[in-house]
Image (tube, rainbow, N blue to C red; front, side):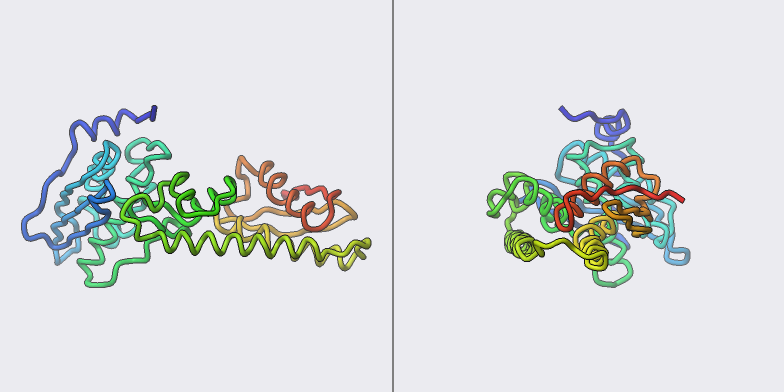
Length: 285
């Protein structure tokens, strides 16, 4: 059972700004009724100021889709187009007091409809469909590449059908199945390369220079990309025998999950690829 906020319940039962604006200045449409979720957003825009004077929506979806669409129209009314272009799906979810994780795709659908409407008003191509640094692969269910790769990795998935069972990606119109297949191929090709790399690790004891180089290479290849995907980064401060001192940067700095990141990601990867005795410690100053 999902836990909805009082505001989600209220916006679902009494949605604001439903319907269509006649002869709108901008239209944004996302999703597909075939897939189960669709949203059409129409805007009235004052051309001299660029202010959104009115916004209405029609949606085919669940309670969260109705509440998210309604919240979106409330958020953007009175904004200029420039201000509205900075509204994110998180703003929509926050306005509602949060959404269940399984329903966050409804806020993403609202953000995409707004982006499409603004592009329509400006006469420019629609933005590449992204959520932060993640690309939406399955438009029907707003499933990103990162979510699919995580499911593949954590559940040892090898077929598109398995990915669909775990993520819903590909379970709608099916147009994204070739991209899911590509992600599967790329992931398992990379995993195969890792296996080869591990077999080729020298059996003899590393010199200090070899050890330092192996640590830096592992961080650059296995650790830094994951941290940067979440807005963070890492810097090696010092290496003393089996101890590696690092400084976390960006969003990783001060994160409540810092200890988990250091042990589960940084230390485990260095032990896997360099030396099983490595201990990682954080330098905060």
